[in-house]
Length: 205
Image 1 (cartoon, rainbow, N blue to C red):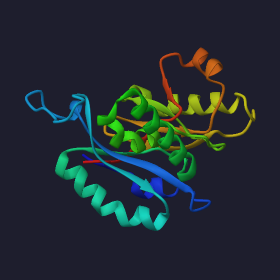
Image 2: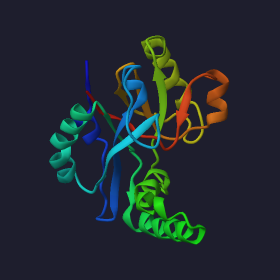
Image 3: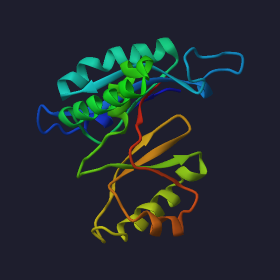
Image 4: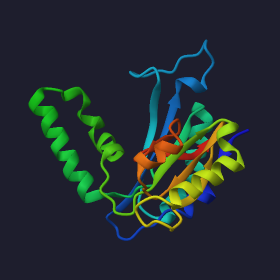
């Protein structure tokens, strides 16, 4: 059974100016293929099918059908980073990265520089983190309730809810939150993974 989170993700996007964008990627992953199949590309674990720089809700809506069809065609999945990017800041970081590549003679990878920078560069105040809940046990109501109660009691803003939503995947879910004190969280949930700048699922065929 596939996963389609377009409607839910749309509610989380907030464009403040023409400088804002969200970074979305369609990736083929090795683990989504049978053992006898291989994916082409330089990285055997995953291959980028296409990257998108979503600049408005209209743009997001316009691309939905194309993204779904590409995911189905390539048996790939689409993920979007919910931390906004800045075209200006990304362009400046892109210029620096390409310049560094030219200086070191790494010309063959220069064409990948923009998507590479868009994937890692983030300077947002209203950041969104992901608590990765993988498997049936980690998606139990009791555990999710306990996680929510825990992070409410953590800095910053003790007493305020930090859980934004829960985004489903094929084998679990992502709990989308605002930042909290990781050291104190890990005392109670040492095995749970927290991602500060990772994509969440938007479509999986």
